[in-house]
Image (cartoon, rainbow, N blue to C red; front, side, top):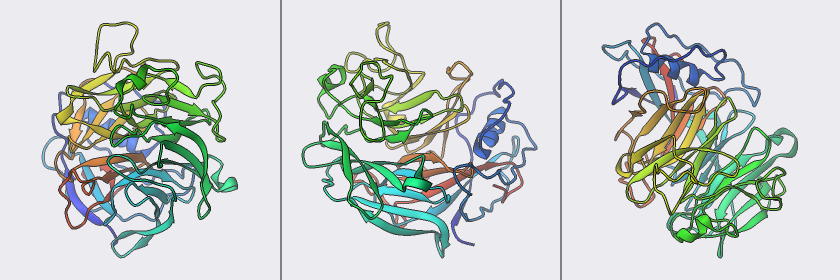
Amino acid sequence: MPGSPVRPARLGRVSPPLAYPRVRRLRTALAASCAALLLGTAGCALGEPEPDPAGAPPNLPTPSSTASPGGAGQQVVATVLAKGLEVPWGIAFLPDGGALVTERDKGRILQVGPESGPDGLAVRPVQTVPDVVAGGEGGLLGIAVSPAYARDRTVFVYYTAEDDNRIAKMQLGQAPKPILTGIPKSGTHNGGGLGFGPDGHLYASTGDAGRTENAQDAKSLGGKVLRITPDGRPAPGNPTAGSPVWSTGHRNVQGFAWTSDNKMYAVEFGQNTWDEINQINKGGNYGWPRVEGRGDDKRYVNPITQWPTGDASCSGLAAADRLLVTACLRGQRLWLVELAGNGTVLGQPRDLLTGRYGRLRAAATAPDGSLWVSTSNRDGRGTPTPEDDRILRLVFADGGAGRS
Protein backbone atom coordinates (compact mmCIF):
# COMPACT_ATOMS: atom_id res chain seq x y z
CA MET A 1 0.00 0.00 0.00
CA PRO A 2 1.28 3.53 -0.68
CA GLY A 3 1.97 5.89 2.16
CA SER A 4 4.02 5.48 5.30
CA PRO A 5 1.73 4.63 8.23
CA VAL A 6 2.97 5.70 11.62
CA ARG A 7 1.95 4.21 14.95
CA PRO A 8 -0.97 5.97 16.68
CA ALA A 9 -0.27 9.13 18.60
CA ARG A 10 -1.70 9.72 22.05
CA LEU A 11 -3.20 13.01 23.09
CA GLY A 12 -1.22 14.94 25.69
CA ARG A 13 -2.43 17.11 28.52
CA VAL A 14 -5.91 15.60 28.53
CA SER A 15 -8.17 16.99 31.19
CA PRO A 16 -11.32 15.17 32.47
CA PRO A 17 -14.06 14.42 29.90
CA LEU A 18 -15.87 17.49 28.66
CA ALA A 19 -19.62 18.01 28.46
CA TYR A 20 -20.15 18.36 24.74
CA PRO A 21 -23.69 19.14 23.51
CA ARG A 22 -25.24 16.91 20.90
CA VAL A 23 -24.33 18.15 17.43
CA ARG A 24 -27.11 17.84 14.89
CA ARG A 25 -24.95 17.29 11.88
CA LEU A 26 -21.18 17.08 11.66
CA ARG A 27 -19.89 18.10 8.28
CA THR A 28 -16.91 15.78 8.18
CA ALA A 29 -15.59 12.52 9.52
CA LEU A 30 -12.80 14.43 11.25
CA ALA A 31 -15.27 16.50 13.22
CA ALA A 32 -17.24 13.44 14.29
CA SER A 33 -14.20 11.50 15.41
CA CYS A 34 -12.65 14.44 17.26
CA ALA A 35 -15.89 15.06 19.15
CA ALA A 36 -15.88 11.42 20.26
CA LEU A 37 -12.20 11.71 21.16
CA LEU A 38 -12.82 14.70 23.38
CA LEU A 39 -15.71 12.99 25.10
CA GLY A 40 -13.57 9.98 25.85
CA THR A 41 -16.37 7.62 24.80
CA ALA A 42 -15.79 4.15 23.47
CA GLY A 43 -17.18 2.39 20.45
CA CYS A 44 -16.69 5.09 17.82
CA ALA A 45 -16.25 3.43 14.44
CA LEU A 46 -15.54 5.58 11.42
CA GLY A 47 -16.85 4.50 8.06
CA GLU A 48 -16.24 6.11 4.70
CA PRO A 49 -17.62 9.67 4.67
CA GLU A 50 -20.27 10.71 2.20
CA PRO A 51 -18.90 12.36 -0.95
CA ASP A 52 -18.11 16.01 -0.43
CA PRO A 53 -19.89 18.42 -2.79
CA ALA A 54 -16.51 19.99 -3.57
CA GLY A 55 -15.26 16.73 -5.09
CA ALA A 56 -14.74 13.05 -4.55
CA PRO A 57 -12.21 11.88 -1.95
CA PRO A 58 -8.76 11.14 -3.37
CA ASN A 59 -7.31 7.64 -3.62
CA LEU A 60 -5.59 7.75 -0.24
CA PRO A 61 -3.38 5.18 1.47
CA THR A 62 -5.12 3.08 4.12
CA PRO A 63 -3.51 3.58 7.52
CA SER A 64 -2.90 0.54 9.68
CA SER A 65 -2.14 0.42 13.38
CA THR A 66 -2.82 -1.26 16.66
CA ALA A 67 -5.22 0.03 19.26
CA SER A 68 -3.87 2.51 21.78
CA PRO A 69 -3.71 0.87 25.21
CA GLY A 70 -5.98 1.97 28.02
CA GLY A 71 -8.62 4.68 28.18
CA ALA A 72 -11.42 4.55 25.67
CA GLY A 73 -9.30 2.90 22.99
CA GLN A 74 -9.21 6.06 20.90
CA GLN A 75 -6.33 6.60 18.54
CA VAL A 76 -5.01 9.04 16.02
CA VAL A 77 -3.33 7.59 12.95
CA ALA A 78 -0.87 9.69 10.97
CA THR A 79 0.06 8.66 7.43
CA VAL A 80 2.78 10.31 5.35
CA LEU A 81 1.13 11.26 2.05
CA ALA A 82 4.12 12.99 0.46
CA LYS A 83 7.75 13.63 1.35
CA GLY A 84 10.81 15.44 0.04
CA LEU A 85 9.03 18.81 -0.28
CA GLU A 86 10.77 22.10 0.47
CA VAL A 87 8.97 24.39 2.92
CA PRO A 88 5.36 23.62 1.92
CA TRP A 89 3.35 26.64 3.01
CA GLY A 90 -0.24 26.65 1.72
CA ILE A 91 -2.67 23.82 0.91
CA ALA A 92 -5.82 24.22 -1.20
CA PHE A 93 -7.98 21.36 -2.45
CA LEU A 94 -9.15 20.80 -6.01
CA PRO A 95 -12.57 19.41 -6.96
CA ASP A 96 -11.03 15.99 -7.70
CA GLY A 97 -9.78 15.67 -4.11
CA GLY A 98 -6.13 16.37 -4.92
CA ALA A 99 -4.44 19.45 -3.51
CA LEU A 100 -2.31 22.35 -4.64
CA VAL A 101 0.61 23.00 -2.30
CA THR A 102 2.94 26.00 -2.43
CA GLU A 103 6.67 25.81 -1.72
CA ARG A 104 7.68 29.08 -0.13
CA ASP A 105 11.33 29.34 -1.12
CA LYS A 106 11.21 27.76 -4.58
CA GLY A 107 8.10 29.64 -5.64
CA ARG A 108 6.57 26.42 -6.95
CA ILE A 109 3.02 25.11 -6.96
CA LEU A 110 2.84 21.34 -6.57
CA GLN A 111 -0.13 19.10 -7.21
CA VAL A 112 -0.42 16.36 -4.59
CA GLY A 113 -2.74 13.51 -5.60
CA PRO A 114 -5.34 12.33 -6.13
CA GLU A 115 -3.28 9.65 -7.91
CA SER A 116 -1.05 7.43 -5.81
CA GLY A 117 2.65 6.75 -6.31
CA PRO A 118 5.00 4.18 -4.79
CA ASP A 119 5.65 6.29 -1.68
CA GLY A 120 2.29 7.97 -1.15
CA LEU A 121 0.32 10.37 -3.28
CA ALA A 122 1.82 11.41 -6.59
CA VAL A 123 3.52 14.81 -6.45
CA ARG A 124 4.25 16.87 -9.54
CA PRO A 125 5.21 20.52 -10.06
CA VAL A 126 2.57 22.37 -12.05
CA GLN A 127 3.99 25.89 -12.09
CA THR A 128 6.72 28.17 -10.82
CA VAL A 129 5.27 31.58 -10.07
CA PRO A 130 7.40 34.34 -11.64
CA ASP A 131 8.34 37.45 -9.69
CA VAL A 132 8.47 35.61 -6.36
CA VAL A 133 11.33 37.02 -4.27
CA ALA A 134 11.89 34.57 -1.44
CA GLY A 135 13.78 35.57 1.66
CA GLY A 136 13.28 35.15 5.38
CA GLU A 137 9.58 34.52 5.91
CA GLY A 138 8.66 35.78 2.43
CA GLY A 139 8.11 33.86 -0.78
CA LEU A 140 5.20 31.96 -2.28
CA LEU A 141 2.78 31.73 0.62
CA GLY A 142 -0.99 31.22 0.57
CA ILE A 143 -3.08 29.64 -2.16
CA ALA A 144 -6.83 29.46 -2.73
CA VAL A 145 -8.92 27.64 -5.31
CA SER A 146 -11.84 29.49 -6.86
CA PRO A 147 -15.23 28.25 -5.62
CA ALA A 148 -16.13 28.04 -9.32
CA TYR A 149 -12.92 26.20 -10.28
CA ALA A 150 -14.73 23.56 -12.32
CA ARG A 151 -15.87 26.39 -14.59
CA ASP A 152 -13.17 29.07 -14.41
CA ARG A 153 -10.04 26.97 -13.55
CA THR A 154 -8.77 29.89 -11.47
CA VAL A 155 -6.46 29.85 -8.46
CA PHE A 156 -5.23 32.71 -6.29
CA VAL A 157 -1.80 33.10 -4.69
CA TYR A 158 -0.25 35.40 -2.10
CA TYR A 159 3.46 36.02 -2.62
CA THR A 160 6.38 38.30 -1.86
CA ALA A 161 7.61 40.32 -4.84
CA GLU A 162 10.50 42.77 -5.20
CA ASP A 163 8.80 45.66 -3.44
CA ASP A 164 5.73 44.29 -1.70
CA ASN A 165 3.51 41.34 -0.89
CA ARG A 166 0.70 40.86 -3.37
CA ILE A 167 -2.25 38.72 -4.37
CA ALA A 168 -2.64 37.43 -7.92
CA LYS A 169 -5.09 35.26 -9.84
CA MET A 170 -4.28 32.86 -12.65
CA GLN A 171 -5.05 29.66 -14.43
CA LEU A 172 -2.38 27.05 -13.90
CA GLY A 173 0.30 27.29 -16.54
CA GLN A 174 -0.47 30.93 -17.31
CA ALA A 175 1.06 34.14 -16.03
CA PRO A 176 -0.46 35.42 -12.77
CA LYS A 177 -2.37 38.69 -12.84
CA PRO A 178 -1.86 40.80 -9.68
CA ILE A 179 -5.19 41.94 -8.25
CA LEU A 180 -3.99 43.56 -5.00
CA THR A 181 -0.52 45.02 -4.45
CA GLY A 182 1.15 47.23 -1.89
CA ILE A 183 0.99 44.91 1.11
CA PRO A 184 4.10 45.74 3.18
CA LYS A 185 6.92 43.17 3.03
CA SER A 186 9.86 42.38 5.25
CA GLY A 187 12.14 39.53 6.19
CA THR A 188 9.56 38.70 8.88
CA HIS A 189 5.84 39.18 9.53
CA ASN A 190 4.56 38.85 5.96
CA GLY A 191 1.28 37.15 6.86
CA GLY A 192 0.27 35.23 3.77
CA GLY A 193 -2.98 33.37 4.49
CA LEU A 194 -5.50 33.20 1.67
CA GLY A 195 -8.94 31.63 1.46
CA PHE A 196 -12.52 32.05 0.31
CA GLY A 197 -15.09 32.64 3.02
CA PRO A 198 -18.66 31.29 3.13
CA ASP A 199 -19.75 34.64 1.64
CA GLY A 200 -17.80 33.96 -1.56
CA HIS A 201 -15.26 36.73 -0.96
CA LEU A 202 -11.51 36.27 -0.76
CA TYR A 203 -9.82 36.83 2.61
CA ALA A 204 -6.12 37.46 3.15
CA SER A 205 -4.07 37.85 6.32
CA THR A 206 -1.15 40.26 6.42
CA GLY A 207 1.65 40.93 8.90
CA ASP A 208 2.95 44.22 10.19
CA ALA A 209 6.20 43.65 8.22
CA GLY A 210 8.21 44.33 11.37
CA ARG A 211 6.82 47.86 11.66
CA THR A 212 4.39 47.79 14.54
CA GLU A 213 2.73 51.06 13.57
CA ASN A 214 1.28 49.42 10.45
CA ALA A 215 -1.19 47.38 12.50
CA GLN A 216 -3.09 50.48 13.72
CA ASP A 217 -2.59 52.58 10.56
CA ALA A 218 -5.84 52.61 8.59
CA LYS A 219 -3.92 53.58 5.45
CA SER A 220 -1.60 50.57 5.62
CA LEU A 221 -2.50 47.06 4.42
CA GLY A 222 -0.06 45.62 6.97
CA GLY A 223 -1.24 43.97 10.18
CA LYS A 224 -4.73 43.38 8.84
CA VAL A 225 -7.23 40.82 7.66
CA LEU A 226 -8.39 41.86 4.18
CA ARG A 227 -11.63 41.01 2.35
CA ILE A 228 -11.79 41.49 -1.40
CA THR A 229 -13.72 40.33 -4.45
CA PRO A 230 -12.17 37.81 -6.85
CA ASP A 231 -11.13 40.80 -8.97
CA GLY A 232 -9.25 42.40 -6.08
CA ARG A 233 -11.69 45.20 -5.29
CA PRO A 234 -12.79 45.94 -1.71
CA ALA A 235 -15.70 43.63 -1.00
CA PRO A 236 -19.13 45.16 -0.45
CA GLY A 237 -20.03 45.42 3.20
CA ASN A 238 -16.49 46.05 4.46
CA PRO A 239 -16.25 48.27 7.57
CA THR A 240 -15.00 51.23 5.49
CA ALA A 241 -16.37 51.63 1.98
CA GLY A 242 -13.61 51.49 -0.62
CA SER A 243 -11.14 49.81 1.76
CA PRO A 244 -10.19 46.10 1.65
CA VAL A 245 -9.60 46.06 5.42
CA TRP A 246 -11.84 43.72 7.43
CA SER A 247 -10.02 43.83 10.80
CA THR A 248 -7.00 45.63 12.24
CA GLY A 249 -4.44 45.43 15.03
CA HIS A 250 -2.70 42.20 14.02
CA ARG A 251 0.98 41.43 14.47
CA ASN A 252 1.27 38.49 12.08
CA VAL A 253 -1.69 36.32 11.09
CA GLN A 254 -1.09 33.42 8.74
CA GLY A 255 -3.73 30.69 9.20
CA PHE A 256 -7.48 31.20 9.41
CA ALA A 257 -10.61 29.10 8.95
CA TRP A 258 -14.38 29.09 9.33
CA THR A 259 -16.40 26.78 11.56
CA SER A 260 -19.70 25.24 10.43
CA ASP A 261 -21.65 28.21 11.84
CA ASN A 262 -19.67 30.56 9.53
CA LYS A 263 -17.59 32.12 12.30
CA MET A 264 -14.05 33.06 11.28
CA TYR A 265 -11.04 32.29 13.48
CA ALA A 266 -7.34 33.08 13.02
CA VAL A 267 -4.08 32.20 14.73
CA GLU A 268 -1.68 35.01 15.53
CA PHE A 269 2.02 35.09 16.34
CA GLY A 270 2.74 37.04 19.49
CA GLN A 271 6.04 38.71 20.27
CA ASN A 272 7.57 37.30 23.45
CA THR A 273 4.69 36.27 25.66
CA TRP A 274 1.42 35.11 24.07
CA ASP A 275 0.32 33.50 20.83
CA GLU A 276 -3.41 33.67 20.18
CA ILE A 277 -6.51 32.36 18.49
CA ASN A 278 -8.98 35.12 17.74
CA GLN A 279 -12.52 35.14 16.46
CA ILE A 280 -12.33 37.60 13.57
CA ASN A 281 -15.21 40.06 13.51
CA LYS A 282 -16.06 42.78 11.03
CA GLY A 283 -14.24 45.94 12.02
CA GLY A 284 -12.57 44.34 15.03
CA ASN A 285 -9.36 45.81 16.42
CA TYR A 286 -7.13 43.15 17.99
CA GLY A 287 -4.85 45.52 19.81
CA TRP A 288 -1.34 45.05 18.44
CA PRO A 289 1.06 46.67 19.32
CA ARG A 290 -0.77 48.09 22.33
CA VAL A 291 -1.85 44.67 23.60
CA GLU A 292 -0.32 41.19 23.37
CA GLY A 293 -2.69 38.48 24.54
CA ARG A 294 -5.64 39.29 26.78
CA GLY A 295 -6.01 42.80 28.15
CA ASP A 296 -8.49 45.03 29.96
CA ASP A 297 -8.87 47.71 27.29
CA LYS A 298 -12.40 47.34 25.91
CA ARG A 299 -11.39 48.96 22.61
CA TYR A 300 -9.62 45.74 21.62
CA VAL A 301 -10.92 42.22 21.00
CA ASN A 302 -9.47 39.62 23.35
CA PRO A 303 -8.34 36.22 22.06
CA ILE A 304 -10.51 33.19 22.78
CA THR A 305 -7.40 31.32 23.92
CA GLN A 306 -3.67 31.95 24.18
CA TRP A 307 -0.44 30.05 24.80
CA PRO A 308 3.14 30.93 25.71
CA THR A 309 5.07 31.42 22.49
CA GLY A 310 7.36 28.46 23.19
CA ASP A 311 4.35 26.12 23.22
CA ALA A 312 2.76 27.48 20.06
CA SER A 313 3.93 29.97 17.37
CA CYS A 314 1.23 28.47 15.17
CA SER A 315 0.99 29.10 11.44
CA GLY A 316 -1.85 26.88 10.21
CA LEU A 317 -5.48 26.60 11.29
CA ALA A 318 -8.17 24.15 10.20
CA ALA A 319 -11.77 23.82 11.34
CA ALA A 320 -14.15 20.87 11.47
CA ASP A 321 -17.61 21.70 12.76
CA ARG A 322 -16.75 23.41 16.08
CA LEU A 323 -13.25 22.04 16.45
CA LEU A 324 -10.18 24.17 15.67
CA VAL A 325 -6.84 22.51 14.94
CA THR A 326 -3.66 24.59 14.87
CA ALA A 327 -0.27 23.64 13.41
CA CYS A 328 2.62 25.10 15.39
CA LEU A 329 6.19 25.84 14.37
CA ARG A 330 8.18 26.59 17.48
CA GLY A 331 5.78 24.51 19.60
CA GLN A 332 6.15 21.50 17.24
CA ARG A 333 2.62 20.28 17.89
CA LEU A 334 -1.03 20.57 17.05
CA TRP A 335 -3.46 22.20 19.46
CA LEU A 336 -7.08 21.00 19.46
CA VAL A 337 -9.58 23.62 20.63
CA GLU A 338 -13.24 22.73 21.08
CA LEU A 339 -15.77 25.55 20.83
CA ALA A 340 -19.16 26.14 22.38
CA GLY A 341 -22.00 27.51 20.29
CA ASN A 342 -21.18 31.08 21.28
CA GLY A 343 -17.57 30.74 20.11
CA THR A 344 -15.99 30.38 23.55
CA VAL A 345 -13.60 27.54 24.37
CA LEU A 346 -14.96 24.37 25.98
CA GLY A 347 -12.53 22.96 28.54
CA GLN A 348 -8.80 23.13 27.96
CA PRO A 349 -7.03 22.93 24.58
CA ARG A 350 -5.16 19.65 24.08
CA ASP A 351 -1.84 19.09 22.39
CA LEU A 352 -1.20 16.36 19.83
CA LEU A 353 1.91 15.03 18.00
CA THR A 354 4.14 17.10 20.26
CA GLY A 355 7.72 16.80 19.05
CA ARG A 356 6.91 13.86 16.77
CA TYR A 357 7.36 15.52 13.35
CA GLY A 358 9.19 18.72 14.22
CA ARG A 359 7.87 22.09 13.04
CA LEU A 360 4.30 22.01 11.71
CA ARG A 361 3.00 24.73 9.40
CA ALA A 362 -0.12 24.22 7.27
CA ALA A 363 -3.35 22.59 8.43
CA ALA A 364 -6.34 21.96 6.16
CA THR A 365 -9.49 19.87 6.28
CA ALA A 366 -9.64 17.65 3.18
CA PRO A 367 -12.82 16.89 1.20
CA ASP A 368 -12.93 13.39 2.72
CA GLY A 369 -12.92 14.80 6.25
CA SER A 370 -9.34 13.93 7.14
CA LEU A 371 -6.80 16.53 8.26
CA TRP A 372 -3.74 17.40 6.16
CA VAL A 373 -0.75 18.91 7.95
CA SER A 374 2.62 19.96 6.53
CA THR A 375 6.00 20.00 8.25
CA SER A 376 8.39 22.94 7.95
CA ASN A 377 11.75 21.53 8.98
CA ARG A 378 13.65 22.79 5.93
CA ASP A 379 12.87 26.45 6.54
CA GLY A 380 16.22 27.18 8.18
CA ARG A 381 14.84 26.93 11.72
CA GLY A 382 14.18 23.20 11.98
CA THR A 383 16.13 19.96 12.03
CA PRO A 384 15.09 18.10 8.87
CA THR A 385 15.05 14.33 8.50
CA PRO A 386 15.75 12.63 5.13
CA GLU A 387 11.97 12.56 4.48
CA ASP A 388 11.31 16.24 5.15
CA ASP A 389 9.36 18.18 4.38
CA ARG A 390 6.24 16.02 4.53
CA ILE A 391 2.50 16.17 4.09
CA LEU A 392 0.71 14.16 6.79
CA ARG A 393 -2.84 12.86 6.83
CA LEU A 394 -4.53 12.41 10.20
CA VAL A 395 -7.60 10.31 10.92
CA PHE A 396 -9.16 9.71 14.30
CA ALA A 397 -10.56 6.29 15.07
CA ASP A 398 -11.37 3.82 17.84
CA GLY A 399 -9.75 0.45 18.30
CA GLY A 400 -10.77 -0.65 14.80
CA ALA A 401 -7.57 0.19 12.98
CA GLY A 402 -7.60 0.92 9.30
CA ARG A 403 -10.96 2.66 9.20
CA SER A 404 -10.90 6.24 7.98
